[in-house]
Length: 82
Image (cartoon, rainbow, N blue to C red; front, side, top):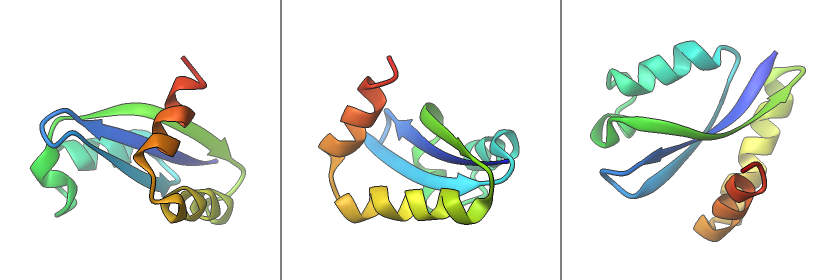
C-alpha cells in the first residue's frame, strides 16, 4: 500500500504534499526534522490522505496536485473529506 498525504504547518501557514509507502514512519520523519524543508515547520498536522495500490500511482497523484500550484485546490481537497 502507498499513500498520498497533505500536511499543514500552523507555524509556516503552509501545506506540504508527499507520497510514501509507510505513512506512519514518514510522518514521524517530518516531525523530527528529517527532511530539510519540513524541519522548519514542525509540528506538521496530517490534514488529507489517499491510499493507492503502489507508490508509482501515489507519486502520479502527488505530481498532479503539485502541478496545480494552488493552495485553494488543496483546501478544496481537504474540505471534501470533512
